[in-house]
Amino acid sequence: MPVKHDLYADLNITRDELGKHRSKDAKLNQLVDDYETLDADILKAEAGSAGDVSDDQLKKLKEKRLLAKDKIVQQVTSLH
Image (cartoon, rainbow, N blue to C red; front, side, top):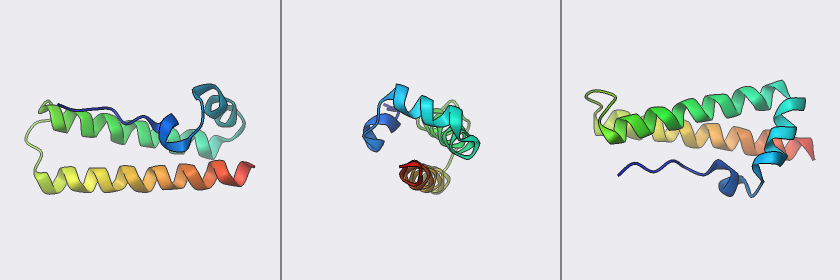
């Protein structure tokens, strides 16, 4: 069963805190949008609603999501 990743828990930040940062930082806003798109694509693939996604394609999507999260962490860290 597909499970949405909790970006806020992973970043140890609240939704409100991240929202404030996003409103002040266009780059962070784009990074979070990209992450959310990748996460949604992964959920669709895991649920089977994205068509015929191979295990290798799913693995690559998950790797992209991890890289996206790492970029978000770097961007949030640079704001402090």
